[in-house]
Length: 146
Ligand SMILES: N=c1c2ncn([C@@H]3O[C@H](COP(=O)(O)OP(=O)(O)OP(=O)(O)O)[C@@H](O)[C@H]3O)c2ncn1[C@@H]1O[C@H](COP(=O)(O)O)[C@@H](O)[C@H]1O
Image 1 (tube, rainbow, N blue to C red):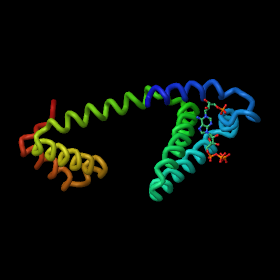
Image 2: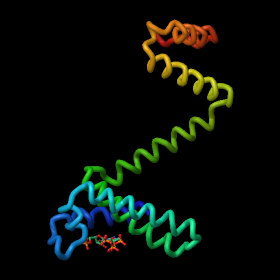
Image 3: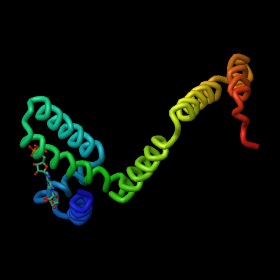
């Protein structure tokens, strides 16, 4: 799939400067990111409607339109397909690591990050409770890295 999207992305880049009268892509670039975003959102809704209606062939067609409009928006935003593949691979690795963590450790890390982000969100100095929560976490043997 990534090959097809990469070829489409290159075709979109090539069409960007064509005559808007004959190239939809050139017309989208001429009309700018808000028009691109509107078209992408419309296509996403069309995919949803066809999926809810159980119309698989229509989902296929609208998904192709959706991916086309997404690559146009990527090009406009300066995003390359490989940027997205890299992010997906990063998440895959994270998921892999998370799955390897023992449940207790993973749950504990989730508790810690929740507590610490709460403490950061509030003004920790003015919120003694937040400090107490962090101290409590430290007491559970989770020393800050120095
Ligand atoms: N992959 C696509 C592609 N997929 C979908 N579309 C267009 O996107 C539209 C999406 O369906 P819509 O129902 O929203 O379109 P519509 O009914 O015409 O509605 P409006 O957008 O006109 O309001 C369709 O009209 C398709 O023509 C595409 N247009 C171009 N490409 C490729 O983009 C490259 C550049 O082509 P040009 O834009 O024609 O230069 C080429 O490689 C093309 O194959």
